[in-house]
Length: 332
Image: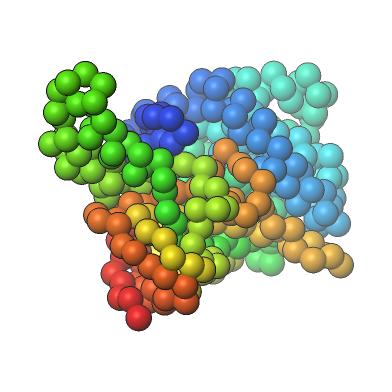
């Protein structure tokens, strides 16, 4: 079950490495205060959700809402502030106990019902008009709860109901990561410092650092070597769980100047419809203010030199089974 995946991050400097574990560890990881502090303190994330919900108050007022993976219940409270008649806040881990306290502290227990369990196992007393969920993970689909949102959509959402956010897009760009090159070069400097030649460690370090795992890192604008290319779009009203097993697309990138490409940066946006206004977009782009998602970085086996106007043409890029990134490319 993809819901039972958890991504632990091992920090080194400014980057983190994704490690995937299984089963109940997913829910256990959300029982600790740290992850909820990080998410709520992420102003871009939390305020965009708040504004996205409030801008849809005409569709929420007097309606029934389902909050999938409610956590501390913040989004459920936003929905009540937008006028929701009833909110079912479904949360599988023990943080649900804190959500109950938060709801009572804000005097909303008459309109928010916290339900402990997964959305696949709980039994709601009625269908809902709106589904809201913060389901996105690293690179969008890592640690993603999207399958649960789709299950809720198919089972509990009324025809013509509202989903917030309603769509997601994935972007990619080549990058030059100088920190990695510095780490690889470090093994050549040991002899000067301590009189021990450890340069043979460089190949081992490259295998450890530049492997098939996705690293979560803050990518600076200066290290991005082309305009972003969108390679996938997910419509939450129509996408199926089967289609999520392999999210893929084609794209090209035209490089800005001469540099060494040693990685590709992947990020996402999600969009909230806004009646009578432009849609509201939550972006994790390196060109936008940083979020706790940062960016996902996939390192190449070997760096490749590029020059201005060089076109990197990618035949396909896959996010397979929600956690493996594979690509094939050619240079022209």
